[in-house]
Image (cartoon, rainbow, N blue to C red; front, side, top):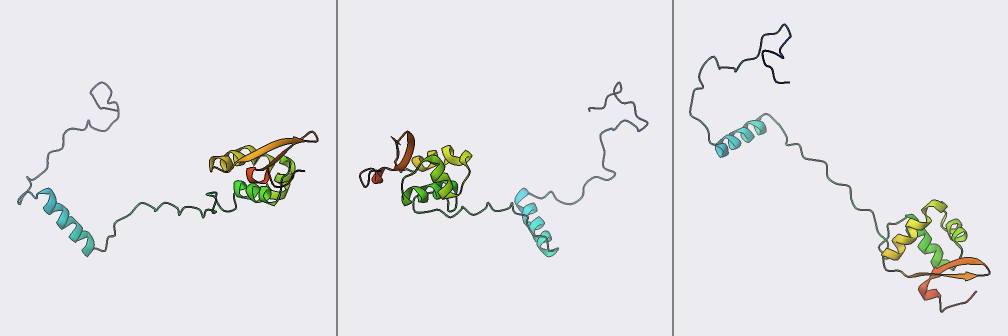
Length: 136
């Protein structure tokens, strides 16, 4: 809060502009010279410059552009093993059902075509290159 006569109610005196007891002595340093002397003084005292933490390393990626061990990579491996329903592929990939739609979207975003067909009343998913291979 800015102290004015009306808002200042504590027992402490109202702050005034501080005047130095003695005027500064010596010549005024330019900014470059000051920075040089400051860093020399800091080095002499053993100060080290504090750097921001480095960002974490990027995760390892599969050849398909998916993160190693991710739900997307697991589902893609399960699809490469063969076609299956959503539940079968999730079980084979050992992931929760809630991850299915985002994982499938990520697989499709990398350019891998996933097709689905209705076979005996169930939706079966497979990679597009398997569509011509074998019919279930």
